[in-house]
Length: 188
Image (cartoon, rainbow, N blue to C red; front, top):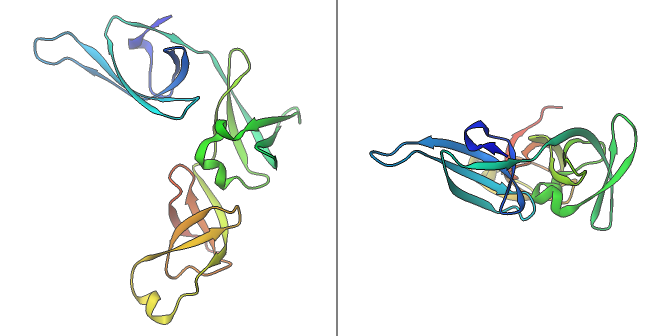
């Protein structure tokens, strides 16, 4: 157990029996009231965001974690097979551990897997941006390219991304894995 004042953004704590990652932690001292810490956390099992006020003297259970680099190999049913970059051991990771950003996993992409002290997988972090090829989108006419707007496009991983009108099939684009938004077209 450690004091909430020793916890920072990115720390993983056990809150109400489940692992949560601290996304923001702000110390507040309103008027003549007692100080508290306002925490925004994400439940690593369910993916839900939680907001909670900790008193300044409250203690929390800090989870000891280990971060390791793995390479995505292939999908096996509902699991994703990852290979340890150091030992070449393979592990299966459930889709729930990766979350919605799993739709941008490509063969050979490196991810960071966060393990708890008991060896279970807490979280899988993909790179912030990935470059993917547009496989299918409606063709743009001359008029479409002159106006701003977006259209749906299916990328090589099967995910659907909203892209500008000038993007064509075969274009390589950069996508934010956290939000699924188009960032820019990549020059070849």
